[in-house]
Image (tube, rainbow, N blue to C red; front, side):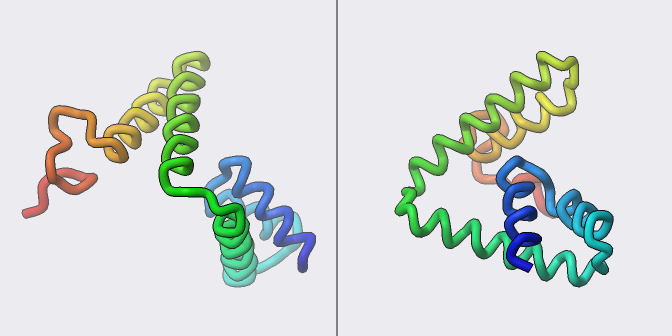
Length: 112
C-alpha cells in the first residue's frame, strides 16, 4: 500500500489531477474507483503533512503557485495551446485579483 500511495504522491506533485490519479490506480493496480479515491486521500494527507512539516509559510506557497501558473501560461504559448494560457491567466486573476472585473465577486461571476 505504501508504494501505491508513494506513486500517487508523485503523480500529485508532478501536477496530475485527481481524475488522472484515480485512472492511473484503476489501470495499473486494478482498483475500484472507491479504493482509488481512498488511496488518493491518503496521498493528499501525506502531501499536506509534508508541507506542514517544512514550516512553509503562506506567502512562500503563494509565490510558488504564482510561479507555476506563470510557467503554465508560458508553456501554453510555447506549444500553441491558448486554452492552457487562458486558464492559467484566469487562475492568476482569481488568485491575485488583478483584472478589471475582479472586485468582490465570486470566481465564476455574479450570483443571482
